[in-house]
Image (tube, rainbow, N blue to C red; front, top):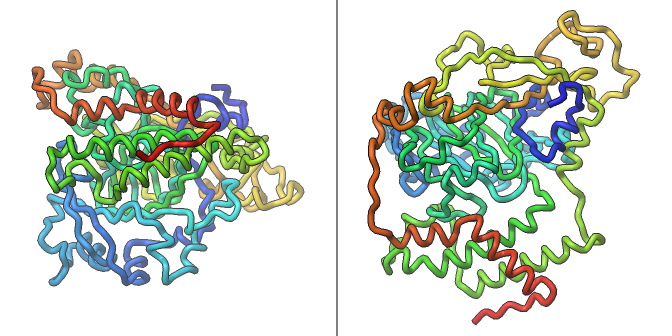
Length: 484
């Protein structure tokens, strides 16, 4: 990639990659939040996911859920939980806790002023605030299974604590064995256990290229559309994210409507007629009747037809986001690879540099520094900027810069790592022997085909895409779907 290209060009490339942004949210009121502060502000009870600390592949359906206050969560994290806390029975050394995926508009319903503590305007998303965001409050080792989101692109602001992100590009989808079981609208999960990859059962995973970044407090991560990601809290942490709508979502919405319709129809066979379906449907998901599902399908086709009408197309959020960085030159800066990767993203043990210093500690990153700017330049007129040169770079900085690294904004490009080479170099030998060395399954034999295997194939993203195309070709003009 040309190091002289501006940030807009980097973002707008057809092969977009994850980026991290430093210094852009320093003025957010939410940057002062901690779990303790949130505990004193929020009195309601929230669903908390309890998961064992294990090298096994854990889906949402494998976890236990408790209703807790943020105060009870905070006390448990601090080791001071008291009766009648429902978390008292969980040993923090053996379990993680996650108050995850909570819409801020619901969580802060009695605190509307706190929604204004989050402002995405600095990223070209005018008027977007906490009302359009979700919050994630997790203990050390709390994680989200490997998946990709079917809608939009994602901006993730790290408020406190650190998180490790492992990302894979959309081109690795086939190599990550996608599955819609357990079912959750807008989430496609992977059968691969990143904590302990079985390169015999999942042979194609060796062809993947993953991207790793440790997100520090005050940083924002840009996750491009359809990028796979596994996320783990390295410390007790708080994150806030917003999924930003894109024009391509009209196609994804149709894919999701088709998936929901087929999954609901196949579920009775999948569950063997059992009344309990928890194993196949995520706890946060609500299923509907066939009639309702077909209504969703018809509405998605209508949206797709409206989108094709140039007169009804809404503003492109991604264009606004990328345009924010137009004309801002970037200079490539190579960082030293500090944290050795293990078989899965293990916590960083080097604590010499704390988040407050704003020093970058990303893994295997190429860092791009925005010249001509400080974090406040987006709200300043050009004549308000001085032409003083920083001693260590060729960047034009603001008058009050004084070479303070906490003032300048930084955009970092997260570089990829070859998965197969990593297995060979870090674990020794060919991938199969590496698998044995990691204590994984050393050999795998065929078993009888189960209904779940058939459903997974039917709901594979490739087949859903082809089915959606056929439905579009047949109905997008008439939009007349029978509910029989």
